[in-house]
Amino acid sequence: MSIWDSFSHIPGNIYDGSTGDVACDHYHRYKSDTQLMVDLGIDAYRLSISWSRIFPDTTGAVNQAGVSFYNKVINDLVHKGIKPYLTLYHWDMPQHLENDPEVMGWRTKRIITHFVHFAETCFKLFGDRVKNWITINEIWSIAVDGYGFGTDAPGRCSAVSGTKKKVYTGDSATEPYIVAHNALLSHAAAVKVYREKFQPEQKGRIGMVANSKWYEPFSEQKEDIHAAERCLEFELAWILDPILMGDYPASMRRFVASRLPCLTEAESKELKGSVDFVGLNYYTANYAQNIKEEVNPSSRWYSTDRQAKLGCVGADGELIGETMGPADIGWIYNCPWGLPKLLGWMEARYGKREFEAHPIIIAENGCMDLELDLSLKKALHDEMRVKYLNGTLQHLSNAIKDYGYDVQGFFLWSLLDNFEWSSGLVCRFGLYYVDHQRGNRRYPKLSARWYQQLLSREGMQMGLVKT
Image (cartoon, rainbow, N blue to C red; front, side, top):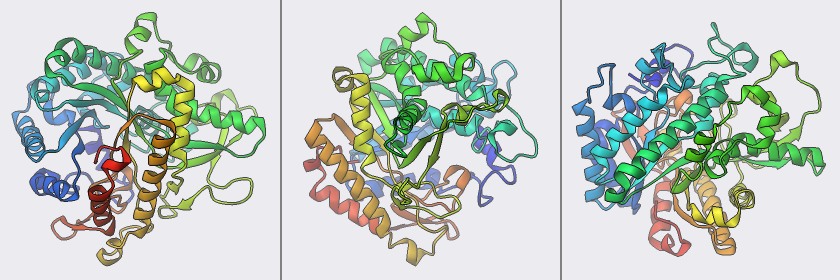
């Protein structure tokens, strides 16, 4: 059992009351799902290993049924000419490690040994066929949503976060920083093992996936320009600076102070350069406005540490981009221009040589339906998704041509309507509609047909991996 299994079964945690027990039932439908990939024309697919399916309990024994399933999926992908990009950790910590008072999930450094053992086991089991590894997906989301806001598993936060809970567990002021720190160290340790024991023979590569919005200054005032820069540092540079530069951003050192863990010289050395490629998840942009008021020390946490007010409406009263989701849980605005800006910001921050030394994979990009749980007839005509994806790909293609960014792949989120974390099953991102009420049957949306045509006509011309 994972922390998401537990979290999703607690009433009130998931928007529609659903769980991930079955979700889109890929477990029983993986062969037909990989055929959908073949029909689309993609040649690479991101999937993740559920840690608790490999090590389901405290005995340390490998679950052969779990291994068998992943072997079948990987073999089917490879047989059909689709390269697996395998993520070791996509948010589903085994519940027994979260409960263990000596480990406490990501909250202590003791997790490093457990993560490395899990990673090494996967390298041994699957590395002969998997040549692209991702250690952890979105450390920012794990730390901030899981331990700051408490809206994701394991649901830890304190009252200062503003999240309404019957009972508060955790500390939003400190735990997000501790969790991210330990996850980064776990990443570096796993990469070290892969490079020393497996990479020479298996000839694969290993990276990490970070996520970030683009932050546009609310106004042309220098205070707002600095606020936008801080937001980028508190989101993307928080994760990438240690990996590419060996330390946390100076702005975080200043505003978080003693609540931000320090990297030792040895940890910094192990982290720096610990990726063969950088995965980047981009969905949308926000405005950032400087906050001048002093925050009471007892009220400080991640969200106030940035000293910026975030919003979707600019000083001119206009939305930053077209709304791409329902009013109550939507968070995506159509801002395709933000992705090239983010890539340019990364190149400026890390230097052209360092930036070019680590190829970029756009590891997630996509949008939800405009309304919740649309009827099948309405959901299949997803013109807004076509518009969103086309805009992203056009801006990305132009950036590659104009600036020479080494973007080696593009993965959209997602192939199927799935269990969308705390938003449940009614929040749909897929190219294929999944009818959860009628046996999880798949139906291609307009966006699936469009994407198929795009790949057959233009994919290689755009300089992108057909993903």
